[in-house]
Length: 341
Image (cartoon, rainbow, N blue to C red; front, side, top):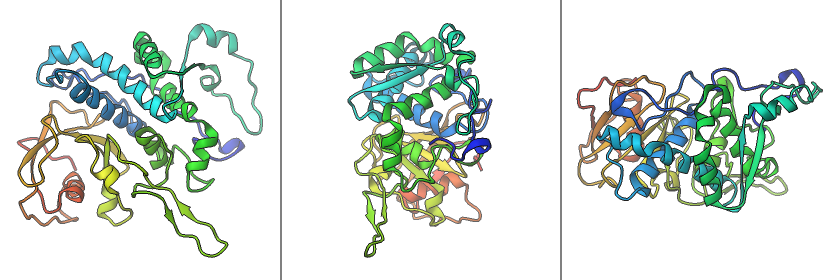
């Protein structure tokens, strides 16, 4: 389900994925998760999106991102709430699963699994302990009490949480929602596929990002391509739409909250507004955060959707091209920050 293949072709999560869920040490970016190596950007960007949802839209009053002390005071609680919501949505808002690597439990399980033609022990997956929850509040409370485990390097919080999402939904249901049996949740080079992103965003492992399902069946040949069936709280914009490779529907392009996951060159990062939903008829500011870019401070983009500026694929930064899929012909001022290519 995750990697595809059989026997010796089976993949596994490498060191690039086995990182904890922890925050950057940059004082002015205290709300930002830290990515150690390439690979789990899709997972971390999605968690980051939900984290910003809770800091900016669930907290009353909203967290002041310019107040480092305030951010540090609330970020761990917001992270627990973000993780709980992703799992609860994946579980159909009925139940969910949390997987954790618990050393005491792992010692009892170690050595009980042997290699077979369909399973290769990796000394981590088979040693996880699962808890199932039947209420949103109970999983949120559990994660709040056990956040230290996800934050500790030895517990590989990113992988543990990915498994939690998969098991919250259920392998059988995920397989039913994908376009075909060849789809996986992790693709080449360890990147999350769109099925994985959609699973975390809307609770369905759909293979596409257009609105609703598309029936391309002809006669007895049944072909239904799965899209996003409801408006998401968190949106998505992608460079692949610039190239005409796919179409992002309004359910993701115009989410209920001004938070967008950005997919550019197979990397996922985040764009959000800290000042309410942008007005498409006047300039506005958006904050950009890339968990892998080693940012030294906040990046504020001033966007003018009325600028009438024609974008050039050959010369404009990819992020500006992505923004133009939502705000056509917009201009972008990086306010002194180095343009990310």
